[in-house]
Length: 337
Image 1: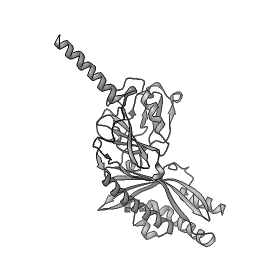
Image 2: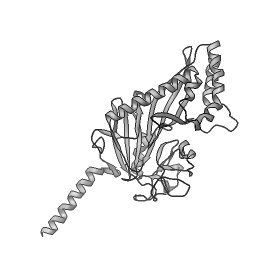
Image 3: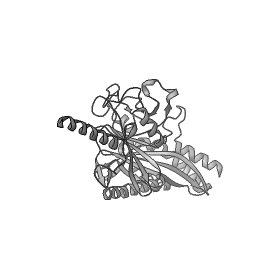
């Protein structure tokens, strides 16, 4: 009799715990800022006030969880948690077909609804931009890494490399997604930093990005090139000469061209960083967007060096289009003056 009562009580308490911790639809209840008190994951490196109301999605492969973080004017805070399933093989993805989920900072580049999908992908799917520039530089291969739903019950580590959620969960996650802006940061397990460490790192990154923008705006080639790793200089040189000519055109015929960076966000994975921001050009009171710029950089002997420089939404240009998106924007702005 006592044993029966114990089993019934234990089962009841377990059910209550499950409902409290996960909530409905496989979601974990919103209950804390992080696992380590008043801290935040160390993948966050920088976010300005212009990102208020935007989100970042963190995938913890160890716990098989997707965590939604919200950027607010008063900081970065955990909002929701969901169960997820990642690749059945452990470790970061290295080659096509290895059944591993990549690890790093990626962005959602498109979306599909149920009518576009076969049942195996559930009711919604969000392709990621894997492989990114850092993956390509490291020789990692593969393609079609998606975050999507499923037509089967969710099991831990049961995908071919994608991030899989229950259909009810992927529908809820979809409300936090902005294409080419929302990051999906995939880590083997979460590590945390205190708020003071985050603020100190943010100040250092801010100084670095402002130095980059100032050298770019003034056309100071030595100062600009000094911020790049030698491996990335060839890519810069391919368009810098065109920029020097355009910069001279503005100074002689119009007014000096000014540049602003808006909605800056930077994320970290191991020793690598990705900064994303809107680049705005201005002359004589007229504005022109050059698109969303993406810088990959690392800390080398105590100072940041850019190892890759590209555009988030303009990475796939027509083969016959030899002009850098920034140079094209300069030309369009000059035509309006």
